[in-house]
Length: 147
Image (cartoon, rainbow, N blue to C red; front, side, top):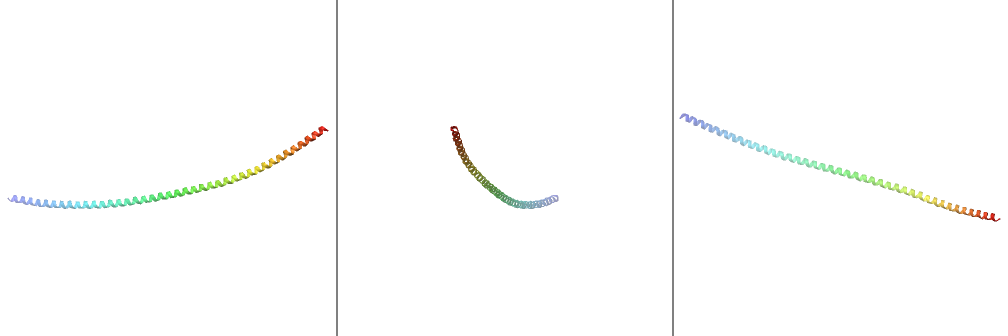
């Protein structure tokens, strides 16, 4: 019996030891679960923080890009207006020069018309005088034939 008692004592000791091991494993499992849960919570917070920072950075980049686009658009419109104004001014200058040239041409043409008119008057005068002289010559030629 003593062997049975010893075996029972050993079994009891093993049961106690087994319970302690199970309790330690349970505590270890609980600690691991708590640690895993804490790690998971920290990672969630870190992910949310990173997500928030990335969203803010994306928003900031988007705002900067919009501002750059607006600035570029404004500069292009200003350049277009400046070019348009320059072209308009060149067109006005060209118009003025063309008007001045036409005025000079008109003046020349008026001068030529006057010259032509005066030349025509001179030709007409010379024609009359030539006719008068021819009549006189014919008249003298007739008188000399009669005499």
